[in-house]
Image 1: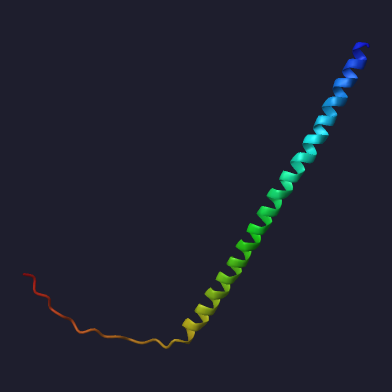
Image 2 (image 1 turned 90 degrees about the vertical axis):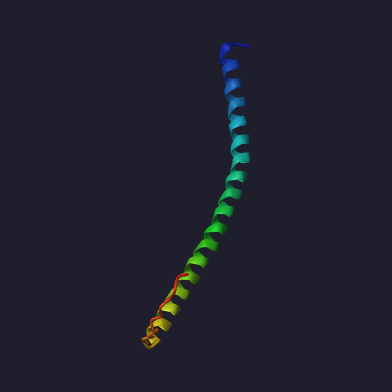
Length: 79
């Protein structure tokens, strides 16, 4: 067995190891991707609901007539 044969064998084993690690990592990457997607969906839904509620409250506030409340002044005694 020559040096070239040994080098080719080492290269082939390293390549197979890389392929195996790539498949293993792709499953983990997919899990992280799905986790991030579900959290982003929740965040977007909460943001949408919040913006809608703010708009509804702003519209209701426009329809409330302005009122002036007067409070009589009181004198407090300090003992």
